[in-house]
Amino acid sequence: MSSKPSAIIFGGLNTCSRALAALLVPPEGERLVSHLRIVDRFSVNPPTTYLGAEFPKVLAQPDVEYRQANLTIPSVVASAFDPPPGKAPYSYVFDLTGEINHDRSEVIAIKLTFNVARIIGLEAARRKVNAYVRLQQPVYETSDKGPHDEKEDVKPVRPLDVWWHETLRMLASIDDLPLVVLRIGFVYGPYVEFGLYPLVITVASIYGYMNKPMKTPWGPGKDGVNTVHIDDVSGGLWACAKWIASLGRQQANSTAGEKIYFHNDRTKVKDTEGTCIPDAQPVAPVFNLVDDSEMTMAKGGSMITEFFGTTFEFYSFFENAMAKLKLDDVVEEINEHHVGTWTEMLQTSNPPIVQTPLDAYMDHWALSRRKLSYNNSKIKKVIGYKLIRPQFTHDALREVVDKWKAEGSWPSLEGR
Image (cartoon, rainbow, N blue to C red; front, side, top):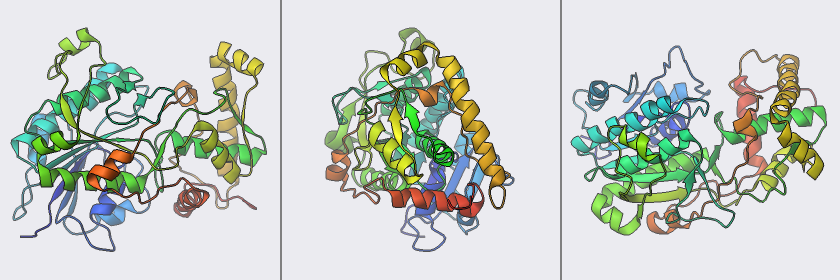
């Protein structure tokens, strides 16, 4: 029997699970786990979500298994915990589940975020796993004074985000669950097509192609939009799992526990099975994970547009006021330029791009103001985590674009 732990990843195939799997069982290099099972609702053959060029190589290895499953059904989740014959029980659980499509209803958010995590968390506790790491997407808004450490009571923004937060309260209330919460910034990196930064990168390339400045109404752009590279998301998840496995929940709470405060509607919580009472303040180890770039809108926008040979600017006060009065019109007008030009870029590419996971459409959510500024010192001090990609750079952007080009997802244009 291998001395290495066996691991199971739930969810996140459309977010960060692919990169985590590549860290745990790299096609080339030493494995960190003896057996890996990945469980999510998507199909991988044929794929019903974007996989990237390298993930199929990860799945093709021995002792790596992908299981398509409906995680809303407790019996299905329970069977996913059963190891293959002759293999040790799963000792590390990575919970990357949760609905990320911001236009989904609150009912869907409860079903696919809160309920799914509850089913997995309860089963993991019953199985007495050694580590349960919950990945928390950037669903919070921080105040202007920052960066903010884990003790500060950051607020979830939208109804979808409130249920991501409520999920943490529920998991933290499962006393014998060896839980660690990893709260991340906005993710970027190779084969990351979801979230804020891939969209900004795509749209900035369009403005570079048109030789026009990219503009935003949210001046002066000092708000934090902290970044984290996908390699550090994977590295941070693994570091958290090893840490909690060596300590257990009680000692981990003593060392790094934080109160998780209520931010929901009392009536909705009362009507949802498994929620904590509003006055409860469950405690769990929580760690922020962002890079050292201290990225703001102005800094990030300038770096990305400069990469594509253009500039990042803010609307004047008058333009800004008019834009806010006619937001629906502005959204449609902006997207006529974005979508039409992106289609042109894909068609004139050599060779033409016939399929891409990247989208140039910016809806109200994409155009709204962001404020996320985390202090990352705790994970460095308590766990000893060292950032793999501490800075957001042009070289990192080049790697992202080059890998998309190589797999045929990004246009290759003459002179660009």
